[in-house]
Length: 583
Image 1 (tube, rainbow, N blue to C red):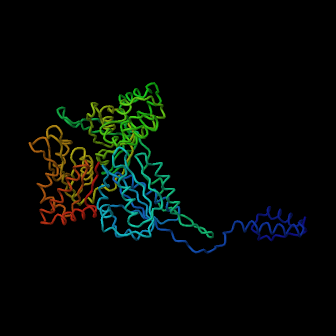
Image 2 (cartoon, helix red, strand yellow):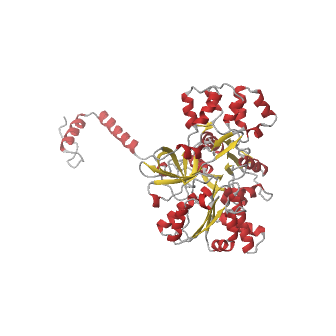
Image 3 (cartoon, helix red, strand yellow):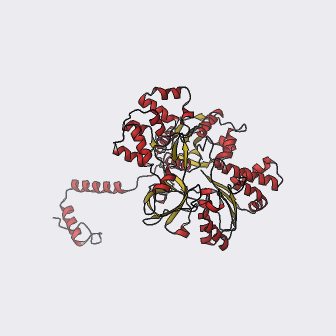
């Protein structure tokens, strides 16, 4: 033990610790003390911040992500690309086709395009203007740019992924270099799209430097702030046919209750409903393929696989799995598309009966997708519920009665007290404006669903803006959906005006576009005063006819040429005052 204290009384230790240290250090040899000093210095150094080494900052590489979307899938994938791109050292910029000025395209060095095809080979409605410009003779040259295209489509339609294919070819014609081969995705696009996005960003990735560190920071919203993609279970609390018993239509008002809070929807959003197949149709398919005893397969076909869609791709798979000579002949002679028109999978397996394995039958199908329906309620009015408006689709082709998968599931097999799965599908492009802004709503048939939500919402918040509804259906007496509610809304002022068109009540059919023309002077006056216009419903005919009527109204009321009138409506669209939610 040392004969004297080494540590002064002012040392930052307690008395017992100081005595113990004196005992150890006093007995230590010079070598031991030197080792201990180095050891303590090493501990201090390991806990100190690393010296800063300044390296030149590498600027993030620009990446433009261009999307053309109708249902929202292409837009969601564009956001996925942007999130992953940030982590890879890019500076991504998302551009909606609706906002694209093609004169800006030559400024983009790297371009990822995600484009959906709508209907029979058409671009999404909001993308029509820019798509037409891109395909036109005035499109700029794009030498020096590299690009990749992801196409979304539906093999049930003849022109599968036509828009994505056309954009891919057009960019190459304009001098851009294809960096990655295009991928054409069907309704089950999630997995192939994710793999393509990863591969494409790796191809586009900036060269990594050998020295220095690049720290990627993802500034996108945290996962907790995003809308959940997981389905919720909802209970049917109301199931009411809004058509009279003498109507030849069946339109179901479906009220859904939730165990807890309803999904955080806003007026204009949709719910995706996960349907089940008709059990009679499932059994017919199983019987025709010799698989009627496979209960596990039956359960999968009921809830997981699409057994109604028949496409050329289905016939190709059928031949690949079975070697069927007659079906191969259809394909070789170009007769496949005309044969499948109006037919379904059950027609194929009954017309050409061949025993199949469960794996072969599954290969002929694709995942059963959910169906999206506009929400027909405001949470401010109905609380923790959500209301849908579903028209049962029934028809006959080739001697067989058929029905829409989701609509007949709702009409025939969902009853009050039953449960079903749904998932929120936001639609930020179909939102209400400021409460003081006037709105014009055009929604025949089930297209009126979101406008019921609009009127409920505006009534609840005491909106001061005027509202005008154009509604149409077949017969006033039998098909006036939500008639009493519209009459109450007129009385309390939440609906300013309503114009009706019932096509079967007059010798000459009258539709909403005819009412628009009749009221063209007031229509243009409302638009001139800042009103926003909303169209919901059929995309194939109604939406096009409505737009043509509005163009004609501008031409007549303002004495414009057809070209100038078209520009006036296009300006409404570019200014986000002409909104469409069509299907």
